[in-house]
Image (cartoon, rainbow, N blue to C red; front, side):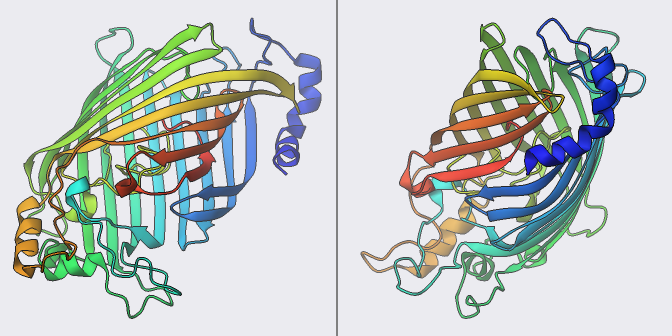
Length: 440
C-alpha cells in the first residue's frame, strides 16, 4: 500500500524525471520541485494502541541545489488510536521561504480517552493499583481523559553572521481539558487522579486543566549535514520560556529553561553514526500547573508528541508520563547503521537499524510535600501499600531496545522502535512504537 501510494504521488514527475534525472556524488537521484508522500497512517504504540488514518508529507526541493535539504515542507494528518486517542495536525517547516529566516508552525488537536497518569516525581510515586491482578477487570486507575489544542509558531535567524549560530523566538498556546476516565467499563472505578484531587496534591483550580500561553526566546547552534537523517554535526538549543497567566488568571505564571544538545558522530563514512541527545528542563520562578509539567518546550519538533518523560519520544519502554516532575534531565544514545540503499519508484531509499539506550530522572520535585502529607494522613497499617508517596528515592530510569527505519529521500522516515524498561517499576513489558522520524 505504501509503495502504491508513493507511486501515485510521484507519477506526475516520473515521466519528466526520466529525461532530466540527475545524480549526486553518492549516486542518489537529486529531487527537484514538488514531491508528495501520501501515506496511510497505520501504526502501533504500546501506550496508545493501533493507529489508523491518513497523512501527507509535501516537500518542495526547488531547483535541487540543496538536496537532500528541502525549501519547505507541509504535513497534514488525521488519525486515531484504538485505545481512544486521536490527532488532527497541520505543521509547516520553511527554512528558505524567507531569506535568512526559518519559520515553523504547528496546529494540533489531541484527544485521549485513555491518557496515562502515574503520579509525580518518578519512583517517589506509589505503584499501588487496587485493580491489579483482579480477574475480569481492566484497570483504569492510571488513566485520565485529556484533550489538548496546541499552537506553536517559531522562527530562527542568524546571530550576527556567526556560522551555524542563530537566535530564535516563538509563541505557543495550549488549551488543556482534563477529567477522570469516562470510558464504558470504568464507571465505578476510582482513579489516582481522583485521589490526588481529593488530597489537594492536584489543586481545585487546576483539576480540569486550563489555558497556557508561552513566550520563547533562545539561541541555537546547528552544524548538522541534514535535518531528518543527519550523519554528522551538532544541534544545541537553549530556550528561555515565560508563561504569563494572561487568560485564566489563577496565579500559574512561571519562567523556565530548556536545554538540548544533540551530536552526530561519523563512525564509518555515512553508513554508521553514533548519535546522542542530552536534555534538561527546569522551572526558574513562579508556579506551573500540573497538566503542563510534562511538556518539553522546544522551538522545533522532530516528533508529533513533545511530552515526557517516558513513552515514544524520550524513554522508549518506560511508561508514558511515568517520570513527571517540575524539572527533569534525560539522555538518548543510538548507533545508527544504514544497512542498504536503493532506488525505487523514482525515490531514494535506505534501510537502517538503531540500537538505543535511554535514561532520565526528575531533577526538580513537584509537590513532594503534598504527597508526603497525603500519605501521612492515611496512617497505613503495616503491610499496606502506600497510595501517594512510595518512600523510594528518585533515581535514574533506564530503557534499552532497537529500532528499524525506512528512509525516503533522507526526509520521510518510517520508524519502528522496540524498547524495554530496565526496572519493572517503569513497566514490565516490551513496548513497540510505530510512527515517523527518529526521536532526535
